[in-house]
Image 1 (cartoon, rainbow, N blue to C red):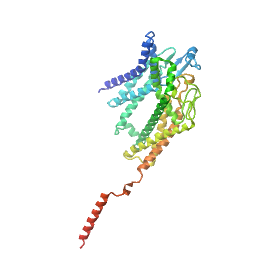
Image 2: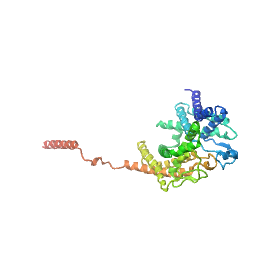
Image 3: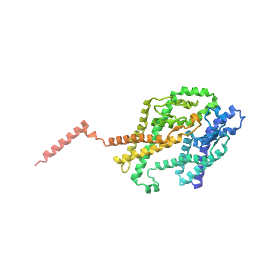
Image 4: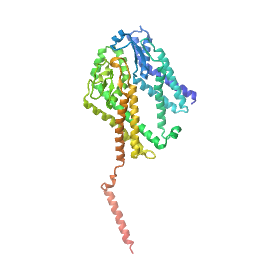
Length: 433
């Protein structure tokens, strides 16, 4: 495969990724335009809405300029003539990162990894810039200068992740620059720390997703009531559901911060944490139905879940450490891995918390999401404590006594031993002079 072909295929797949992300929002909006509005209005309005939603999902900020009458009609009494929307619907971003990882892995399978990665990111940046130019309106518009940079960074993170996963799959492949910079033991400690931290964060996010699913199940009736109160119709309901699905990963990460302890902010910085409740009324968005009005102080027991996630990850990581060459199983080694995984896990949690928050609108929808530094610090400590327990338990389990020699002998083994002893006595007796 030639360099030009690798670049073309990578760029083409990047454009397809952007088209799919845009199409998910544009398809239902086009149905609303055709069925509910009978194509009487300009389709460009719905194109701009889909483009704005896609760019916001990638993390691009948007400027909103509302007059006081429009702001009051939308239920935003605290709105100023202009404000900025900074929150990203992570459903779009996660899909983009996933597709970028596919492009990165395919590029890593060729001899022109850098060419494929640069071509894919450049094509995605160009697409985002063009979309941002066509999405401008007097009331709402994405920041054009941010569009190629932020969208390219989101897609580029997936490309880098895909290349890293491809390199990690090849156990014997170590980049020469990395081999010169770090020794074997240092690379082993760093790799084990990153692996343990990633597994612990993944387990914690999975537990948070289960919590959100349980809350959706238990508050399903309230969510349906909010849908009925909005009277959005079938197509409007579908569009609203897709918009909420885009923000569902945000809700999972907010639940993760709640499990860690700091909680998350809703409106003016009011924290929703274990032992606290809502201090302000929320808009009638069905997804907000899962937020409890109050949680008891005993809910702080939930911090056991991050500790357990770290313990399970540490216990499983120890098996990999003992199988490495040479084995990486001394108390000092395990302490280094525990500390390294706590730092790496805290940084990952802080990044996820920062990524999930922002401002959607003034008033009750301002300052949404968890505190990045609190989530990172407390989460890193909890994961680190669990990691230390898991590694220590696995180490002690491997160093435990071998009880096989104290088991009751098998009858066949005893009989065989008697036969051997009898033969030895017979030979000894007949060999005497």
